[in-house]
Amino acid sequence: FCISGHVNNPCNVEEEMSIPLRELIEKHAGGVRGGWDNLLAVIPGGSSVPMIPKSICDDVLMDFDALKEVKSGLGTAAVIVMDKSTDLIKAVARLAAFYKHESCGQCTPCREGTGWMWRVMERFVTGDADVAEIDMLLEVTTQIEGHTICALGDAAAWPIQGLIRHFRGVIEERIAGKRGQIAAE
Image 1 (cartoon, rainbow, N blue to C red):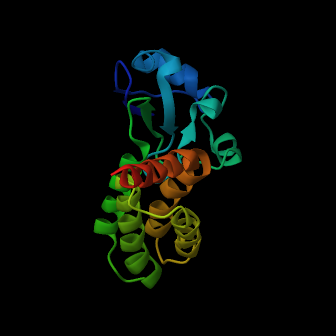
Image 2 (cartoon, helix red, strand yellow):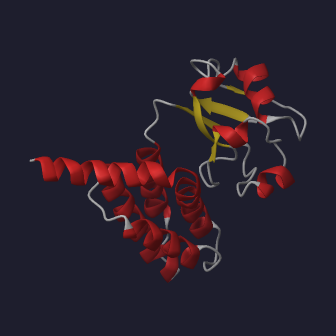
C-alpha cells in the first residue's frame, strides 16, 4: 500500500489483504492529521477509484470484495487520505483535468467526455453551475464508463461518481452559496 495525503507519516508498506483501512492508516502512517475524527474521505485505490466518506472508512477492509461492496475499489492500493480541510470538489476537478490531459483521443466517449466532465467540474468548483448539472454529469460518467477501448474512461468517470454519490450535498451547497451571493449583490 502507498499511503499519502493528510496523514502524519506518508509511507509505502507491505501489509496483508483485508486489513481494516483505519488500522492501515493508524498503524503505518501515524493516523490522520488532526486525528481520525478529522477525516473527511479516502480514495482507497489511487485516483481512478471512487472516494469513500469517513462513515465507510471506519469499518471497511482493504480488499477487492469489501471495497467493491461499498462501490469503490482497491485499484493500485494507493490510499489518498483527505481531511476536513480538503475541498473535495476542487480535488476531483483536478483529477478530471488530469484524465482529460491523458486521454489519447481515440475513443469518442473519452475524448469528448473527459473534456465535458472537466468543464462541469470547474463550474462546480466556483459554484457557477446549475443543480440539474449534477445529474447530467452523473449520466455522462455512465456513458463513458465501459464504453472505451482502455480503462482510462472508467478511471475518469469513477472519481466523479464517488463525489456525487457521497458528497452531492457539498456540490449543492456550493452552487446555492454562489446563487445566494449573486442575489445579495
